[in-house]
Length: 152
Image (cartoon, rainbow, N blue to C red; front, side):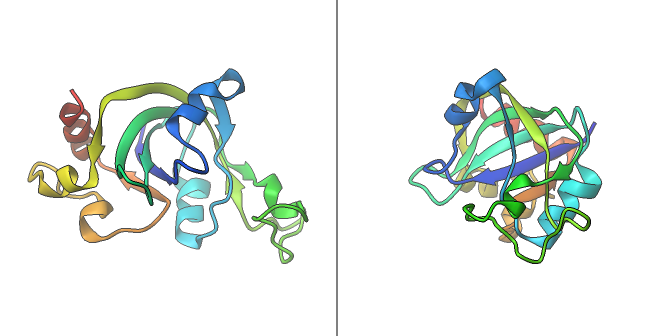
């Protein structure tokens, strides 16, 4: 099992939205950065755990946990002309973008802020501390455990 951080803007989709989704599950759509896509396509696997991270909002930080419930498959939005994520260069024979389904596991007892993450010397590898802006990024087991402990 691996650990991941998925960023989302809570005005568009939050941990609360995931909890309220049918079967508490959603396709993690709209990833349009090649490195983040490659993580989802090649790294994220069924059963991996995901921190849901709220960004571009008043309270930035890790808000909850989800679990990956499918392997990567083509993002249907890339083919939808009405979608903000439509990609005219993507075809069903050669899709450019993928999604994984994630299922809600829990809210954290308290949001773990970006500021607190940056100030915690026990957290050493997470890209957030280095200004990482990817919407999908790996998290080491040690960093995962440190962030979970901060939420207690």
